[in-house]
Image 1 (cartoon, rainbow, N blue to C red):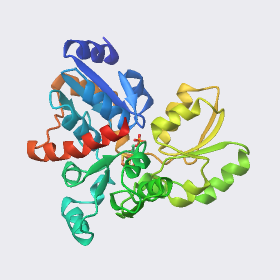
Image 2 (image 1 turned 90 degrees about the vertical axis):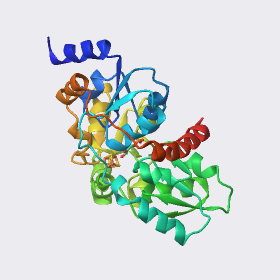
Image 3 (image 1 turned 180 degrees about the vertical axis):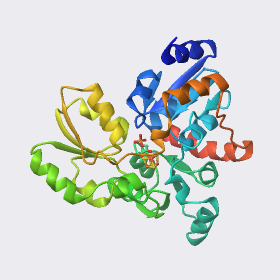
Amino acid sequence: MTILERIDALRQEKDAVILAHNYQAVEIQKLADITGDSLQLSMQAQSSKARLIVFCGVRFMAETAAILNPEAKVLLPAAGAGCPMADMITVEQLRAFKAEHPGAPVVCYVNSSVAVKAESDVCCTSSNAVKILQSFPPGQTTLFVPDQHLGTWAAQQSGRQVIVWQGFCPIHQWGFTTAQLKVLRKKHPGFTLLAHPECDEDIIEAADQVLSTGGMLKYVKQKDKLIIATEATFIDYLRYLYPEKQIVALNYRARCQNMRKTTVQHVLKALEEEQFHIQVPPDIAAQALKALHRMLELST
Ligand code: 13P
Ligand code: SF4
């Protein structure tokens, strides 16, 4: 039996569903039952009836799935797959931030710890951040954690006022420069630039469309010539899906090392050993669930 056949047999036998984030390696996306962005995968995890959810992504995504679907056993195949942005604010720092701005509601990007979600009023992802901010009345200032770039962009788009935490994604913040963009624009005139909202303001300003990875997947269908500013493994995936299109990464070296930790062997091991089981303490999970539920209510 090949490794893929063993994975298939185990997924049947153990009643498992394999979810993969859009930044996962192409071979993982190919074996997954469901692929998507953070919001799409959260919703899929919530509604899944499978006994096991194998979450090919990073820890905060698997934790979110575990909170939204306590009936399922959620597995993270690569135990060390974290998100540096999620570690840029602790619950103590969030409490201090709230104390500096009494009464201001907190919007928390899902790229955060469970404890931070539990201290927040509502979560958001890159695909619904604008909608979530618009749910607050104009004139209401909210605190936005941890991503300064998503918070700033979503505030501009929604016409709401936010005070942002100074967190960022190292891949999106340091991976792209306007100098690289100038070179590519010259080389590929007429290409459409898509940027993820975690990018720096100068890249966002230059972009034709600012989209989540799920939004990009949809948008790519309409265009044949694109430059994309986001994690480069996702561009590998788009090129695999659309070999006939001209899809160029703003930087092929902008890769999330945490997303790359999951291998096909890890997925097999996860199914064989039912590892690594993601468990969230029930009291924190119950609090975080309120912020996640509020997000899902506002997203539909
Ligand atoms: P998406 O929700 O757009 O897939 O983004 C998740 C992420 O971690 C981006 O760095
Ligand atoms: Fe976190 Fe950035 Fe990796 Fe997304 S790409 S998981 S924000 S480190």
